[in-house]
Length: 509
Picture (cartoon, rainbow, N blue to C red):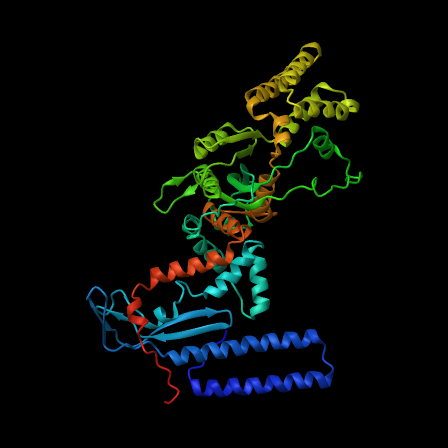
């Protein structure tokens, strides 16, 4: 790995020579007929080397941060310059630097309370630069840590360890919750109503290691029989009404994959969600050690999203979820007295219908019967349908298990009657299926955390879920800026000391 050039004059001469060489290289590539991809690769490597030299020159011009024998803090305390300089390792995207700095404290062998050069440079807490952290984690939210390490190594020319990527992932995620609290959703006047939805998705977890042979990093291969832990995923978005008929829904549900879609005019084209945002969490330990339930994170967030999107409280809130009673209770608590329409996910309902079709109908008739069952539900005939199922169960020779299945589904429908007014929902233009939250579960959780062989700790999975949501919500640049500012404020509180310092630029030395 590279080392910083300590002689700034020699470093400057080398940079000038390097630039002149690059001009000659380009001219030679023209004469020799070199292919453009080879030229591009060469120039990229040389640009990294030049960046390393320039950054080293920058460090040289700043010196070691000597602010005299003593400094006086804002609270009146006097710190003295400790003996000698201390070396700190800094890993930039260009390579490694060893920075010699003066440090200040009350006495030797006690805490180094003030390091002028670190404060002036706003160095990160760890050894890796903020730019490296930003780039590496922008990749890590989409690809495995091993893949990211390989890609960065090929690009930058120095190796990145998987453990460093994992540590950086967790460290960056520590400020995700603070960022969300300080970044409210914008009001969305273009939306006719607000949609809120939530669901659970399992994350494969790594069991506590009992021997070194089965230890694994977050996201790496682990024991084959590890269990899953449920992540709660929430989605909020605004939407414009899209009126549909029962016939249109029926056709979309049961259209053959080989059957071409009917052309849709502008009015019939599916309207996209407006300002969609997602949030995901596992039940995890907070900083104070107390356990935080995932539902207590996601549902209050959904409530805040609704209030921020519609501060006047004039829009209807459409809540679309499956039949888990605990989720409906959480949604009611989060939304309070907001005017809302509760919709039982219709795709979930059709799964229940298929269960009964397999029990009550002959295989050759199941598709035709399903058309009729779905059409009745879409027209609000839930009671009539449950009465028919119970009648069929009584008149047919069914096993006790099959009779119990029929009764279970009928009871499920009756318990959710108020959420199955599909005819009214279609006429009002509301969504009746939770495709958005299903897509969010797949995109947030499955596509990154459920890849073959992956196993996670709670801490590692929670960090990845938070950063992945930030990326999916297109908040990455805003979040990384927020994070650097917050960490710098924590690490370097003595701004009045280093901002007024006349940093040395020894050009005349």
